Length: 364
Image (tube, rainbow, N blue to C red; front, top):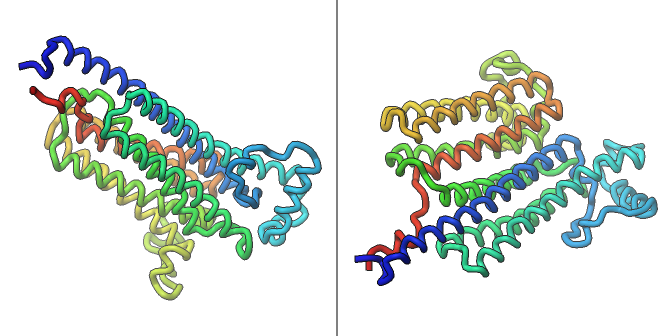
């Protein structure tokens, strides 16, 4: 018996559902691209020490930059009152200040832009009935997380305005990781809406693919700590670190656990170990996926993931050896996002596409 009394209705409904999914997917991939750009500009803001150049949080008015020399002088005067200027940049010219100001302003503008790119189409698709009901809580959750991320960004900046000359590495790593979680969530929903050339993978493949996403996020969090501590500026040799595979002095601070977050040497060593571990996990996953389902789309994607992780490792080593030049550091951050995005898409594809509402309705 057909799903409705009109034998043509199910086919028309499925076509309409697929068309709506296509447009929602295109929108979500546009959000992913915007998030990618936002994280890269955020990385450049950190690497150029620009993040404290704007000392106030003005979510609405802050979109307008200084428009005249008087406003530029006022903004510069605010910056001159914080420790970073007093202890590091004393004597900086107004022209030099404008360089770091524009990096931070661009980062904040892109952050606002992501909000509009996400919220306005979400409202349109919702109000015009183009969103499937199971997507609504997912997308609202992403939107809420984006709002929280804005507050976390200011919480991070505020840590460097009173006593420190830079932001807290804890808050920087948190800000970066939340951005990446938003990136993962958006990518996962978009990939779940895509047509899949193969059915779901075996349960072991699906589960391992999900843990790989968690492993990439953990490595990115440690990378945020590395950036916050400027840990990449020291021990610029590989494969040895400070003349040894396992250097000394990893736990000189007390209590011992604090070295994992505040000792630049320990944090860089953890980042190295994380890279080796991630590569080993990706290789193991590829072998297991190929054994479980040789020649399948899932197995081929697992091999591609290994190759991307290898490229990322090579860029990371080059960045370290060259003492973190801006271009290479941004490449390292960008490819980290590519690894994360591909791992997420692989995991979501291993689970299979979201069933269409017309398929879920079944036969009445």
